[in-house]
Length: 168
Image (cartoon, rainbow, N blue to C red; front, side):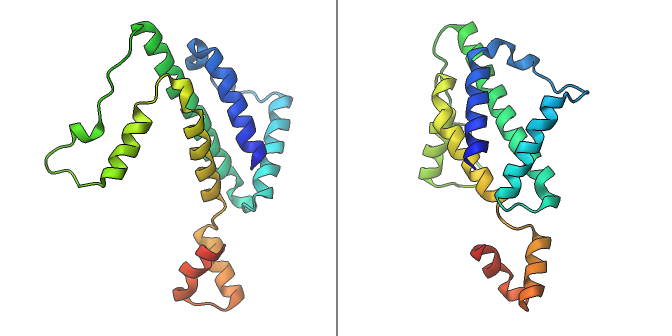
């Protein structure tokens, strides 16, 4: 897990130092040999987390989307803050709710407001790491298919399925 978190933080820091060019990042249609080597390292890291080989591709996709998506959003915020050269007024999502919207706890409103009002974008690294750690923890949960297979091996029934997932 440390490899995945540290490499994501390093990439994010390097990219945000040059935030004006982040929107021009793209995946090349041709994979250079160093990219293949890097993907082998990430594949091994996902396997060491206990992720089924069949799910490593899904895990790599989720990880990449989270890391790159976060970088793109933070770079965009930095660029717009620079262009406006003034503090932006952040609007609380609680203030924009429709009258018929589902109610949510005051703690949830506060937590969402805290995330949306982070300025400058570089101050959100702690949130980035916490979110990435949550994503990686979710990857460790067995897929429904894996849990069913484990149930059969252990002789369990449908009622023990939830207990098995919580135990793993």
